[in-house]
Structure formats: C-alpha cells, structure tokens
Image 1 (cartoon, rainbow, N blue to C red):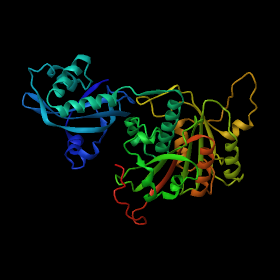
Image 2 (image 1 turned 90 degrees about the vertical axis):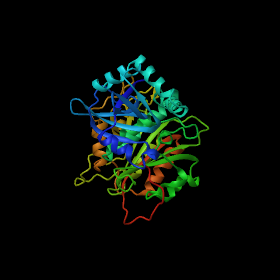
Image 3 (image 1 turned 60 degrees about the vertical axis):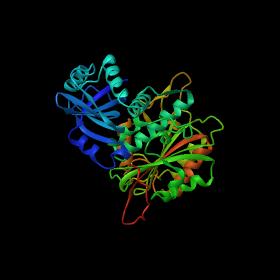
Image 4 (image 1 turned 180 degrees about the vertical axis):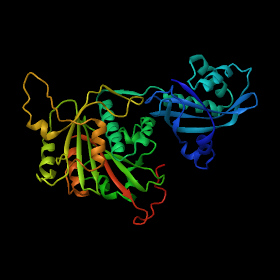
Length: 408
C-alpha cells in the first residue's frame, strides 16, 4: 500500500468545489506531474492545502494512475473521494510534517513510517475520519481471486477494456481499477461503481437487450453506459455483463461486440487453448459475410479467439490480458500436428484489434439486435459468461427522458 499526497489546486480544486463532488467522489486529471505512481496500482490519496507554516488535510480518496502523458506526466483518476470535516492541521512540529513535505516536493509516495505517522494523525482527529481511513485502506489493498472465478473475472475485464478502446474511450480505463467484489454480483461489471441493476436496463436507449431479464435463458446481469458526456448521451458504449445460472462451473467468457451504425457483429472467445466449441461454428456459418471482392472488411467472419494464460484476477494488474487474437476460421483450417502447438502468422494485437473493431473493419455484417440476442443465447447455453458491448450513439433529440439513469 502507498499513500500519495496531492496539493489541491487547478482542476482538483474545481472538482472538489462542485456540488456533485460529495455524491460522485470523482476527479480526473490529465497529464499530472506525478511520475512515481505506476499504472495499474491503487494508492490512497491525501488532499492538502497550504495553511500558514503548515498544511490542512482536507480530503481522502483513492487514485488509479493511467497512461503516461509525455516524459514525466501521468493521467490520474481519483474515486471514492470524500472531504474531511473537521479539516486536520499538520504543523511543522508534528511527526507527520517532514514526510508530507518530502512527498510534496518530490512528488513521490510516503514510505512506511511516514504513512503510519500521517494516517494516525488523520484517524485520531475524529471517528468519521478513522472510519474513512480504514475503508480506503481496504479498497487499495491487494484483491486477488484465484481459480476459475479469477479466470472469469480477468477475461470479463479484458472484454470491457477492449470495448472501451474500440469505442475510443481509453480515458475511461482507470475506472476499471475501482472494482470491488460484490457477493450478489460476482461478475466484473457488477463490482464497478458505474454498474446499473438489470431492472433499469429497460429504460435505456439500448433496451433491445432487456430480453435477458425475461428468462429466455436463466441469467443474471449488470450493465453500464460509458460516454464522454456525463449524462451518457452522445457517442459511447453500453455494456451488459451476463452469466447463466451459476449452479455449475462456467467454461469461460465471450465478448459480443455490436455496432448498430455499421451492422457489425463480432464475438471474441476467451480460452486457455485452441479448442473451439460447436456453437462458434454455428455463429460463423450464420453471420459470416459472403466472399465479395468489393467488401472493404479485412475479416468478414464474426468469430475470433483470444488464447490467454491467466492464473488469477488482481485489481492492480493491467486491464488487458496478453495474448494474440486470431480468426476462428484460421484455427479450424489449420492442421495441428500432434507434437507441436498451434502457430499462426495471421493474428492481431490488443491495440490493433480494438482500432479495427471500432472502425467496422472486422466482423459479420447486416446484423441487428435480433442477431445479437441469438448469439448471446448460444453462448449462455454453452455455459459461458458474456459481455455484450453496444457501440452506439444516444441521441437526446430522439430519445425520451430516462430520469435519474445517468451513470457518472
């Protein structure tokens, strides 16, 4: 665990002064000069302001560092932020003062003894502050889940991250580090602050998938909408995370990606080997495009396979799993020798795949919500967890008012 100190100024001051800060507890900073924080690691954030010769501690939160921006700057995403009342004053004669000054001047986290000194000062100031410190320490601690449960969560997170990248929403990736285990929603989206209950999905602009709650296939799910606009409208992606009845062990995860504007339907099958289930053949047969020299798509088959080797799920790790993405048809047509693993020169990296997917260069064409429902039903019947991503635009002028449905 690491404690990072942030002086309240600029974007951070504006965020903390807004009326919705106490409700959302979020701050996003682009290109912040704090190079010592590592991407994918969670830290406890302490917010301070200058006060005479000392400092006042005015808030706490959690920070998830994102990508580098330049040589020394990094994008930061804060969540679970809350103000401390009464504010805690740290004077030069306080044991916590030297470490606070050192961390501020060097833009580096506190070391072990400095952390204890500062957190003790905050905890001893008030009972509410002590509870806040205890809660945040739990949320930045190591959260590792092993076995098949960890495998499923890691693949579901990868599916969500790929969907965000395909929708050109990379800036929202740090939100995935805010995942918390929720016993009633063991799937990945169910543990995010942005998740919505399935009962709310019927009122969203992508409600065509609300059939899932009608029992066509026994399943439970959560959903979320991610967009650049805070009300969810405009370009963005709606994601539904569904699992079949959890009475038996699940075999893996599928990402079903749908772009209504292009009519593109794509399925990414996550697995630890190159074995293809029969339902994948059925999907390719039904929705693969016909050979057409004028077709600009690089691949007209909807099914892709991502072979991953993951031992456990860890909140602090990278959002995307390593592993090449291959066309399922290539795997079927390749004669695998009995003494050698499958090799294919035709594959895509995570970044290339996401860029091509979002631009409509991959997947079966002329698809609609009916085809998406058919594919999801086949995957759920095969005992697979599913992440459905709908890359589309919520248009205010054409959609009715959804009340308090906004995610952020």
